Image (tube, rainbow over all chains, first blue to last red; front, side):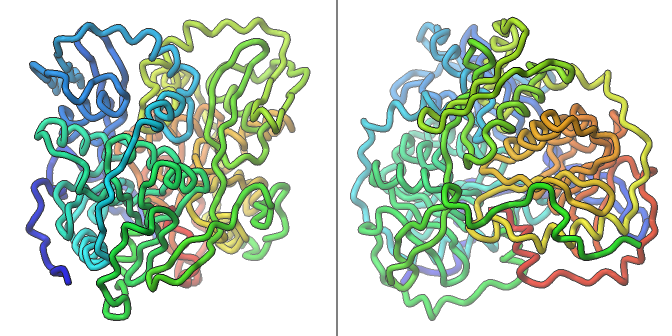
Length: 294
Length: 294
C-alpha cells in the first residue's frame, strides 16, 4: 500500500506566491463593497524554431523554455533525438527561440494547421492523428493504491488554482510520486511544459502516469499517447471519441476520480487493484473545489 | 424584482436526452464492478465558405449550421450585412458549406492564423484584437436581480453537463430571461453557435447578457465584445488580461457567481443594485457541481 503523504516529493511544484503569475485586481463584490482578488496572468509567448516563427500561445508565463520545447515536440517539429543548441527566452519581447541543427521548413505542416486553427480543442488535430498508428504503449501495471495516493497528494498541493482559480493543472507521476506539476491558462500548455521538461531532462515516458484536472478529450488522449505515456487519469469527465482512441492505442483511461470513486473506460488490464476503496476517505469541500476547473 | 422561475422561457434549451449527443459507454468502477456511464460525443465538423475549406472544429455535433455561421462571423469572414444563400450540412461527410455572394479569398487571413494555430485558447488571437478599437458597447443597465434570476434558472436547467459532464455551456440572455442555451465540448463552439443563431434570426446584441460556465479569459472577453454584447457573466474565474481588455472596451465583466456572491471587475457602472444579496439562497451541492466544469 503506497504512502498517502509524499507532498514534498516534487521535482517541480506550483509556486502560488510567484509574483509574475498572479495579480491583485480591484473590483466590487455582490454587496457593492470594494474587493481585491488574486487573478492569474495570461500573456502571449511567440515560439520560433531557428529562423521561423511557429506559433503564439497564450500562457501564464512560467517555464517558457519548456513550453517552447514541449510544443515543438508535441507538434512533431522537434524529433526526440534532435540536438537543441540553445533556447533563448526574451522576457521583454515575449519570445522563445529554439535553435537546432536542422533546417526548418514547415510550410506544408503550417498550411495543414490553417485548416484546424479554429479547432475548439486548441491544437492541430489532423496532424496529430497521423503518428498514432505507430504508437505502442508498454504493459506496465498501475496500482490503484498509487492512483489514490497521487490524487490525495495532488489535491492537497498548494497551487495557483487554489490561489486564483481559472487555471488547468497537469502532473507527471511515477508510481505513487508526483514528479512535475505544471499549471497554465491553457491545459495544452501545461502538458507541453511537461513534455519540454521530459525532453530537456531525458526522462522516459514508459513508467509514467499523467494526471490532469481537465477533461479527457480526444485531443488530450492523443497527446498523452504520442508522448508515450500509457496512463491518463483525471478528476474530470470523458468524451466518446477520447475513449475510442484510448482503446485503439491501448492507453489506460481513468476519469471522475473523486475520493474513493473512479471510472476506467479503457486499458483496465493495467490496473492492479491492491487498495480497498472503502479505506479511502471522501474529499472535503476544499478538495471538491479542485474539481471545479474554473 | 425579477421572477426567479422562468425556466420554460428558452427559445433554445439543451436536450440532454438527444441520441446523437451522448453515448452509453461501458467500463469498470473503483470496485472493479462493470459500469455504464453517459459520455458526450465529440466529432469533427469541417466548415467551408463557398469554395474554400476554412476550418475543422471538434464539436458535440448539434446546430452545425449555427456553428458554421457563427464561426465565420466571429472570425470576421462573414459580414453582418452579408447575404447567405444557403447553408448545406452533410451529416455523413461532417461538413457544412456556407454559400454567399462574396468571393472567398482568405489566404492572407489564413496565413495569419497559422501563427496562432497552436494557441491555447483555441482561436485566432492576433486577428481578433484588430477589430477591438472600433467596438462601442451600449450603456444599458443590468439589474442585479436579473443576474440572480438568470443564474438560478440556468443552474436548474436540465443540461448535457448535468447528464454527462465534460462540456461547456454558454447562454444568451435578455433581462431576466435566458433565450438560447448552447453547450459544446469547446466553449468557443458554444459561443459561435449563439453568434450563428443571432445572425440567422437577425437578433441584436445591445440589450443582451452572455453567461458562460467557462473562464473569463482574454479570448472570451474579446469574442463577446466583438459580438457587441455589453455584459459577460460567469460562475468561473478571471484572467488578468481578460479584465484589462474588458476595461479597455467598456464591457461589464462579472465572475465567480455562486449563490449570492459575485465579483465585478470591469464596467461596474452598468450594475443597478436592485436585489438584496442576503435574500438570495445559497446553492445546494447539485448546483455547485454546475461550477465544476469538467
